[in-house]
Image (cartoon, rainbow, N blue to C red; front, side, top):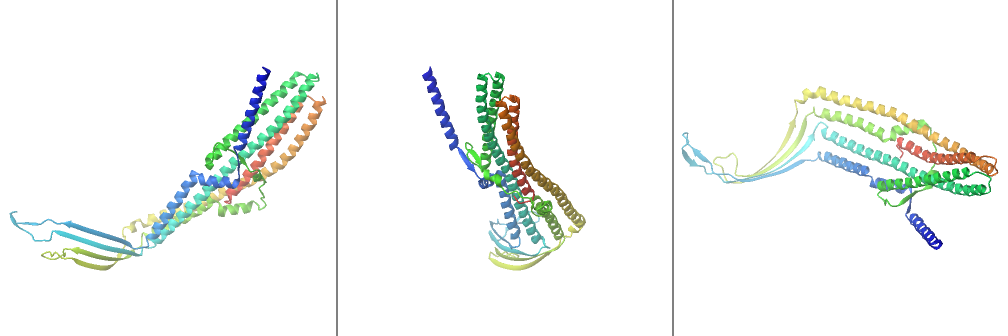
Amino acid sequence: MIKISNKIISLSLLLLIILISSEAKAQYKLSVEELFEKGVEHSIVIQSTYLKVEIANDKNSLAKNKRLPDVAVTGQFGYVGTSTIFDKDLSFVKHTSAPDWRQNYQLSAVQPLYEGGRISNNIKRSELEQELAQLSLTQDKANLKIWLVGKYLDLYNLYRQRAIYSINIDEAKRRLQDIRKMREEGMITSNDVLRSEIELTNFDLSYQETTNGITLVCQQLAIALGMDEDLLYEPDSAFLNLKMNIDEGIDNYIQTAYHDYPEMRIAKTNIALAKNNLDITKADFRPSLSLQFGNTFQRPLPNTSPVQDLFIDSWGVTLNLSYKISSLFDRKHSLSAAKTQISLQQLEEEQQKQNIRGIVKSAYLKHKEALMRIKALETSVEQANENYRIVNKKYFNQLSILTDLLDANAIQLDAELQLTAARTNAVYTYYQLLNVCGRL
């Protein structure tokens, strides 16, 4: 039985070593640059926005083509049956003598000379729509980066938590060994042993929970980045060394947001679109002037009697002037609607400015709070470590009870976890501030 047990233990250790080595091979160091690059590359939302940009570019090209001549070529070729002539009483008289085949080929070109600004304003409109598509792309990229940064920091936080639990597990095991020795010597009761074992079990469970959390977040990132879902991704710890200075002052951040934040730029572009729509509306009340060239090659000769089976080639140049009189009846309401739309967009821009001031100030203060929290928690960790050292020494000198020691350990663990969360939160709030300022 002893030999079998030894074999089982040896086999278990071998399997454990294989699992540990395979897990190490499956880890992948993921940099922030690669995070953003692959995230943008594989995002379905970003791909859709790219397609919208392409559509806007094509519409702009079509609008510019309206300045070119409208060229058309037509051709007709057909058979015409013989006509029959009847008398007044519908009695047959005779069949006419006319050519059976008819052909008509035309070439025409119309060059717009004046459209009241309709063509140029439609081109400007398509350019503004291009700008809106680009701004939407910028906004979607920024939103994606914020999401990726959040997941990336969650992953770092989980790795750090697991490392803290691992240290506490090792410490709990050493402490349990010492407590068992003290129990064997009759210095303490079995209750201390049981409570220490329960604490170690809780640490093991927390360690496993953070390990599962790492696996889940890695899978979420892998799906978003188009990478292998079976890999364990390890974030770059240097990311937390990011310089997060906010010495510019909140007013500078607000002014930057007014100018660079995508939603503010979209609001400004919408005003420009509304003004452009007013110009297009005015163009509908102006005359149109165009130059037309045409060439016709046909058979038989038209307007001859009898009809002659001959080809004729004719051409001409025409100056066309048109004015839509019915537009005068719509002028008042059309202009009023277009001007009201401008006022509406201007109000939305002002509303967006008010929102921006609140959003920027909130992001600015939250980041300052996050930085202050790090400093406070760094002191708390030092104090918790010192407190645990003192209580630990007292307990093993039988100057304090186990409850005091476990409480000191819990305070130490909580302080370390809070400090880790505070450091990652400071980075996240900094990126949020960059995002609302249009710098991300």
